Image (cartoon, rainbow, N blue to C red; front, side, top):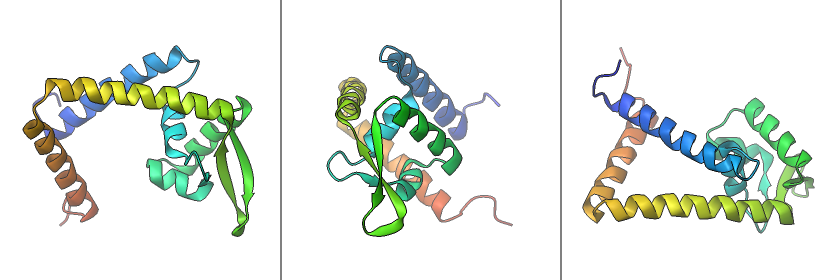
Length: 145
């Protein structure tokens, strides 16, 4: 369905953004998913593995695969959570912190480029629209009988 629908515009735009980030990530022998994960881990105190998936909107199996590859590449360390014997905290290594900074700089570049093209009013409207869509979804305003 290629007509001008809201979901088509959102999906097509996000796919273009994801492609752009993945192409850039290749220059760093990485992926957008790894960059997003690096940005989601607290660089100072680490992040509980159980909160990482929901924070990123990602399924546990997909996240587990990404974390395993990140650990192999030396980007992260897993340590037992001292406050929860069953839990694990994910920490960035020095190399992971370096790669996190690379990812952060690319996100900032993208945001600045978009901000330079749009007025403050258009950006405010954009965020109002996305907030409204997210609220409608969380309030289950769609597909009710």
